[in-house]
Length: 160
Image (cartoon, rainbow, N blue to C red; front, side, top):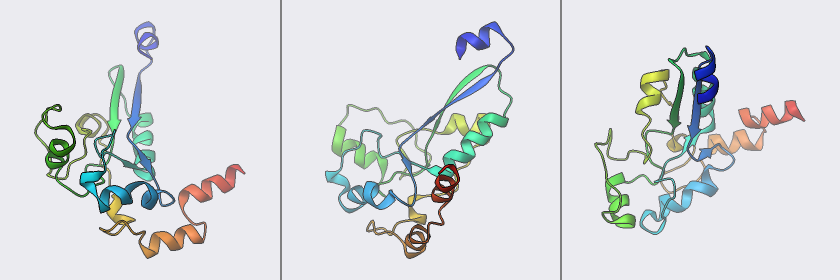
């Protein structure tokens, strides 16, 4: 992308999503960390993104005029372990990871500051919309899955 931008008047945004979740995998993927955050290390530093917030970010990236090629990370602002990020990092990594100023105690391990500033990205969904604090799928999400009424399921049905 960088070479194409240098040689032409193209611009572009590379979106780097964190661990993508939807109604069909929230419980399976996130419940272990909710139930036992100290026993659940995370390669993504407890970052995740709701598939529908990711879709919003992709739309914003396609619509936004940028000064060239920009790279943004997409994640939810909260972590999926429901604990202070500093506590999780210290428990699992000691002092190996430098923590910068956090926007919130339960922040994600991936900063979305650039996506907010460049794209106007403002994620509106959280694991809390789908799971209880104990990691059980909420009734509303389970019912959507059962009826095949999630956006993901409807999209799959269209592509056959």
